[in-house]
Length: 358
Image (tube, rainbow, N blue to C red; front, side, top):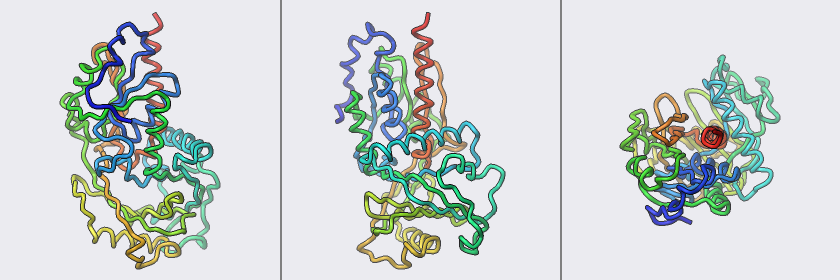
């Protein structure tokens, strides 16, 4: 699927091509970069993705392969960001209904809150989620202040990313495996391209001409419990933040979570693992035993690309080029993925308009 680095032969005649036929260059091939590439290719654009890690890779720094990847309405969001999540839900639902090989499934969900929801809580998701129901106190454990049930979408990234990579290739997209030190390296490598998308995640901290000091690595570790009980997702909102995410197509549950800033250790911390199992059992004792058989357990470690103050999504002019930035999603990449892709496509179509209309 991937080509060797620094191959720009397809651009040799690009200076003679109309704007719409010049390749759009995406730096980064995680869920944000790949979702954007797919949307652009379906719109008829030419796309090249350049990245150190590609779909199917198992490096802990390729966070898109290790995500919990359940859609969840975020709290504290602006209306614009809520819409990005809503648009993502629309795309994921279509994938669940029409492309089962994409690894997206519908499950039931139960969400419990330690405190009553505030003014800008995740309850806004009721406008997007099917079968949303505010639970009566008799329907949730007495140690919670509120609870909701709904039908939700979960994505298995171990299936979704390879599927997305295959779809991109089938649509004519190209992957180049290459570590990039600066966006200017891409400008030199693709001198006739005028649209560049920076979806490099935490890599934006070290890109020589970006150096976004708000970016940081955040270690996540989960437990995967093999079980046939993969019908319902459980989510605990509050100080004892916990999730139990079904993966029906892989035959198990993802138990989590934890966030460890600037920790890059690939080693499984069994103290964390035992705590995640204990929390998951307290949240969903009917599906997570207090002491699962070790033979039913495996462990997931991934390094999330996070950013203080939230993700960056913007367009700027760099000379004659348009450079789009979309990075810093932390553990919310899948919840924003296809909505971000739509937003980037819109920015690119605006740039196209400005270049083709005299």
